[in-house]
Length: 178
Image (cartoon, rainbow, N blue to C red; front, side, top):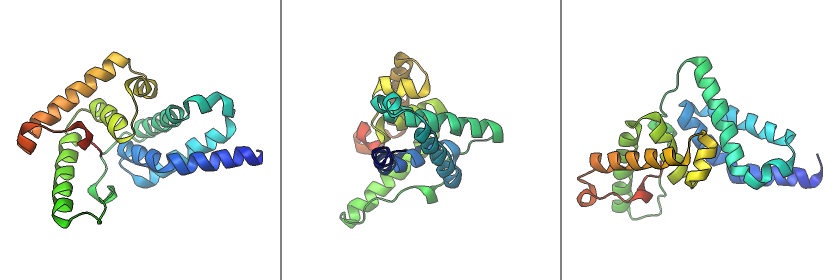
């Protein structure tokens, strides 16, 4: 691998490692296995021609991680939701009252999100946690764009209904961050 290829891999690793580990750990329910899956994805990236993956690098990485995580889940016969101890904590630089309120709201959203069907949880996380658009989510999950739109719509509607008392019955979609 040339120096420029090595630098490119290093940049990709710096940019995508955390979001990929977070995504895989949500799929697998195990942070260590998630790290292994992401490491395998980066090893595979090292063997792929750069020009083949670079135009759609984010979707390629998430697809490889998703497929490997699903394979592991099938192989082991279980996929469990991630525990609260693995979740990232909000910044402590905020006002303490707002921090507590944000933590409570985030915990409630996470509890409600965990109650959604797996496919709705996954597309909501890809949309709001990783910033993918419908087409990109469709490429990662191999579902149609229309199905992605439906799953997001139904998932958000269900979350809004369950969170009805929050903010006068209205939950902003940017709150679905976990």
